[in-house]
Image (cartoon, rainbow over all chains, first blue to last red; front, top):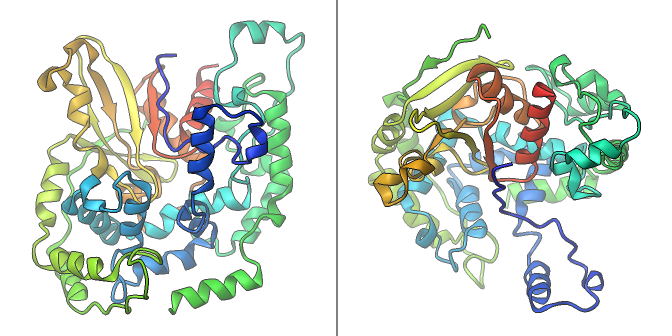
Length: 223
Length: 196
């Protein structure tokens, strides 16, 4: 491994009881993460909506052009409230214009929608899932592990109209694994694999499309 | 590998730019709710100002030219025409790194720092630290999107990036940077499946 670049790390617990005797650094972490406004961090909210609906917002150009992306730039940058101190006006507009010209905004929501509906936005049980197993830990494994089930996000062919129909495929996640993507043995920790399977089993409970939320979504659209 | 990348230059039609300006000229805005101007979304006064600038002063062609200053390619992969600027350094043999934008971002984020990675000596760094940089527009994003194409979840995006780096460009080893959760590790998983 050469190195790891890390940003947007919010994997650790926000629960103060997780840090019974917090160090100064942990105290600061808790105060900052607990102050995060989930409505502001719309990464895990907006894109969880059905993406075709969500993309109407930035597309409401005659009403609020590019507003959503501008708000994201401001909320996600260290700009102390002045977005242009972090990102130039021309840069923002180049980015927003590209979304407009390509029409890709709805498609760009898809991975977030997929993650919210198939795999909950939660950290893995152990960090080892994110890193290759060391040689020593592989050596300790006395037998070859069974190929793990990889929790898949929904991918739909062009023209598929019903996300739920796609999601139902995940009752058998192998259906959505392409052959070249089939995992070879030993690439995942067993614990992480089990968690993936558990996450996949919560598919239908984790959707954002409860009636009250749909009403709220529509109300916001027409505000 | 049978797929072959083809050089790509971005050129948005004049009619699309005129259409955008026309829409911006006719933009209607909501009122500003009482309280902190940014409390409920983008400050409407700021948005008005930005919209006027967008309509009257923003130079899309300049932004386009900045992107086109980089060698760009497209390659048919996983049912999309994957777009990627690629800047190779041949001597000394550099590590390759794939960088990818996130939601609300785009390839424009990388135009300033790609030269710093590919040519650090020019910026006061050490030439031996040079990287080869590949900056794919993720499938479903920006210039890797065509209306009606298939949709991608994060594992499939990661697999597509690994396919580009390994199957198309021939890197057995590379760094991955992603501005969002999971993509880095999932690219790693996709690569391990390839070279295991």
